[in-house]
Image 1 (tube, rainbow, N blue to C red):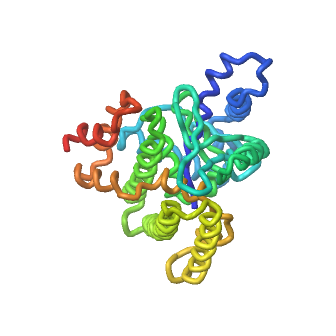
Image 2 (tube, rainbow, N blue to C red; image 1 turned 90 degrees about the horizontal axis):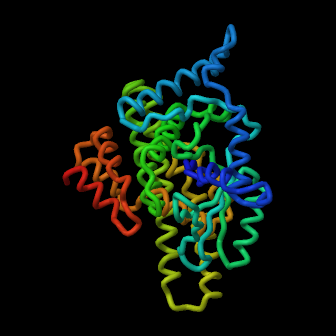
Image 3 (cartoon, rainbow, N blue to C red; image 1 turned 60 degrees about the vertical axis):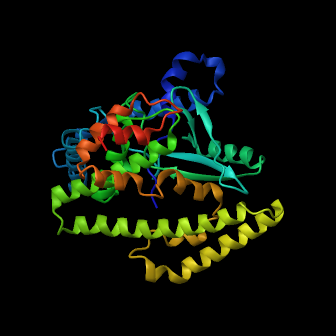
Length: 355
């Protein structure tokens, strides 16, 4: 399971300008310093082709990224930036550790507030120990907490977001999804509308990647079958998650005492994991989700799926109703930059599409 996340590190620029050295404990200063360290060591992606005889994998990766960027910019109409024109060789297989939290007896999302972007339901750290420290602090407030490693985030054009060495091993559809997803964030990001931003980027990244694979390899290719198979397993897994969420919501909305709710919650999750293990080989085509049964599932984990994956298929339905033209869809999205916190961005998007 991969979640492509936009982490609020782009406040780092303002923080670095506004915080003096005495404020070394400042969150944005710490994360901004780490981020700028990575960016300062990043090299042009073309350097992967600089050797007299570059490896086939490096050469293919550099060419593929350039091709995906060209597709995203020229055919989809996403904002032109210098993102993914640089490369950094990192010594781990993820970029940052991100903390999310929720009430332990309801799906009440915990949020952090940052300048410029407003309230967001996640907080990222380049140092995993700092993420674990944040988790311990939140758990004292009777919150369920989840830490996950993420492989990308968008700085919304404040910096030139680089590629990282672990991305060289990604299948082409995953690489395309990542670049298009994060490029959508760099094109439009609505302050105080985190769920809208993430659901929209998830949809555009997925559909954009499918269109790229279809255009580049054809719909009878192994690459196209791979993305369709991955999408099918993803939809199946989302169904499992949504069934579990629905079962827990009934419990949380009941009038039974809190301690009894927590006991029943644990039993419901245990039963769901057992059913998942017993039916896995029937439901799924690959092993990508098999480890779910080993996870310490809690509300914070489940709440992530409520954040990133629309339950009502709103964007998919809107896309179909508007003619299934992703470039036109993105053009309409670009008109939403002035949406206020109290406004409904979905209604404004429908208006921009003349629906």
